[in-house]
Length: 466
Image 1 (cartoon, rainbow, N blue to C red):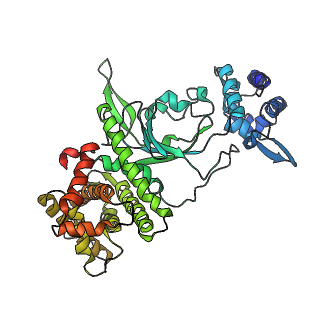
Image 2 (image 1 turned 30 degrees about the horizontal axis):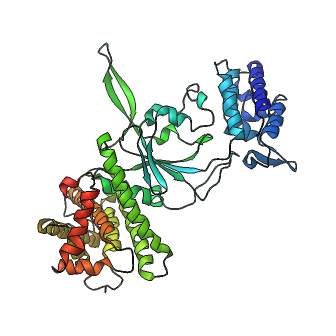
Image 3 (image 1 turned 60 degrees about the vertical axis):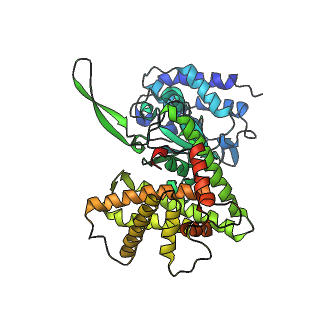
């Protein structure tokens, strides 16, 4: 077991001598601090307590030798910030700073995680598995512990007010493509797709649960106990007017939560729903490794549909609001998602839109809903066709266009959910079953019974509207 007492004493001695440093900011940058003779004692103590063989990420080469990186020890750990605060006369709990620094140096390198900040309002203590992801809310104190030096959060002006994020929903998961690197070098993400597309397997069950809009507000890299890469500018906020006890009005900055709201009473239902839907997604995506063509294509089509659906959601800023320049393009996303799910490998091109329309309608349980779906899908195809051929939907006023997009969004959400419920995991194709149901054959056993069973066992939030 590593002896950390010498390291802790070295840090305390370093902070004690910091009281005699200049308080001029330019004189106490991390670069300047690293040249202080007293810093050598900290480096030597790190070498003894956290050798390179066990803590490679602390070290870099200098003049051919492996030595602890000053940028990591001062910048990555927060020790540099603590030193500057001491030099400037702030009251700093040096014992806690020393303990945090020791933990930073001697703890195993944590996994790098992707954290998605979502709109929404969820109960405190929410924790719901979503495959390899987790949907979770945190208190401000819990978020504070994610950084390398939690005690400094309340001492440094201009930082992120973690109270804004108390109760905010995060979806997080380890990033298998990255390892911890405390060098302080910037990380450039060249992964390509937008976050809602990259992390669709976590987000899809949530948007299928509720008709309310859910957005990804920001994505952060997190290394627990070392780096919590949140920034004030990445948190959407607004101001609310409150009246104090003297009757005076004051503005309070709060996080924008949107309309996605989960009550504590709904949490068990949400957890059961997410478990069921995630299991179906995972089973279908296992087809990517199948030796059979149909399961592989089905997995790719599900991913394509989910990505386009989530992209359309992300560009819909309110329940019936989209940017005017993008309104026509959203029809493309929805129709691409629809065709990805409803098309069959055996389809001929001729009459494909009619088959897509009838199959989508066959997913619904009542004749009135089926007629409504056929109308909405037909209008979507018409809008898509006009747009891709260079026209815009000038024949519709703005309110009608927005209402049409809202109806299409809500119907597409239902189509994706029902497709997931009904699609076989093996080499059987769903399209012939939907075609037969549209013709009035085998509907009860192939379509209605499985859907009713799913909605009884794991109903979404709006099950009363189905």
